Amino acid sequence: MKYRPMLDSFVPYEWEPSTDEIAAKIGMKPGRVLRLDTNTSPIPPVKLLSQVGRRLHRIPINHYPDTSYSALREAISDHSGLPVDSIIPTNGADEAIDIICKIFLETGNEAIASTPTYSFFKIAAELQGGKYVAVPRREDFSDNVESILSSINSQTRLIFLCSPNNPTGNITPIEAIEKICRESNVAVVVDEAYYEFAGKTAASLVEKYENLIIVRTLSKAFGLAGARIGYILASSETVKLLNKARPPNSLGVINIELGVLALKRRNYMHELVKLINSERQRLFEKLSKLNGLMVYPSEANFLLIKFIDPPADKVYEHLLKEGIVVRNLAASPPTTGCLRVTIGTRRQNQRLLNVLLRIIGEQKNEDTLG
Image (cartoon, rainbow, N blue to C red; front, top):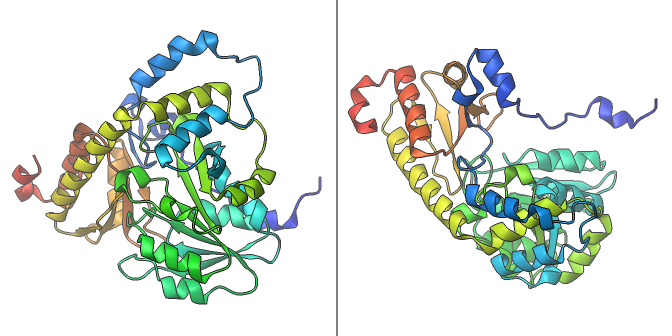
């Protein structure tokens, strides 16, 4: 069987093991495993699921969905403040990124990214035959805008930004995004998967810059990671272009119903964001008091922590034995020695803190961490 030769050296996305797999590995019941590695919501939208459940008998599951996703686009329009012809619903943010790469990249073209950042940018670009150009962030993880602009050449077709950035948690200032849009003639993609936690967006620039494309998701702040609902915000002309690569019916009718209801009834999302942001600040303050580590400020639903003593790998393994799963970034510069931790509920975060306290031997701080 013949296939593309580039796949022999291609490094695919590293899938997270299932909770059942982790539980079996560490000899623990799945219900005791605490997932702080995927940046998803610690609380499912139970009321929303109940509302959809009551409507299931009226959902035309035997037919394909409205391929224009008109109801979902209207709901996204209300949330984003942009007109419906500036919106493309997608099967999660990853499909949005894949569509963008299909439209703009072919063999020999280049995609620039401000790194470290979301790993799927590289994967999607290389699958289209593109060359991924990593532009290192500054020491404080801010974007090096001048280096990004100076890296543009005749083969450059895409620039990837992520705000708030995964895994560092910091934002790209609106002024920096506008400067890159204004001074480049290529598509500028801003991944705003964690936008709701920061409350800062480049959406106001979409109608001003035709080369600006924003990608968002309902997986994080809306708690719908399992439903796979994302969307693109762009100028109406850019939307027409991107729609040429959009597959039909990639969102099912139940997912559409979930998305519409979630966007129309956003109060629960705002409450969740308030809870997560409060816990993020609390966790940041508690961790900052501990010796042997450094925690970076974040405007997302996670924290990046650099461990010095004990080393990150040891902390990771110890946490795993206790049933707490975090993302290990320790082996890849510039996040050497770092673990990324998703913000959970207060009880979940306290469980993490208690284990960290034992690991690093900070018993004297026990009272301050209660």
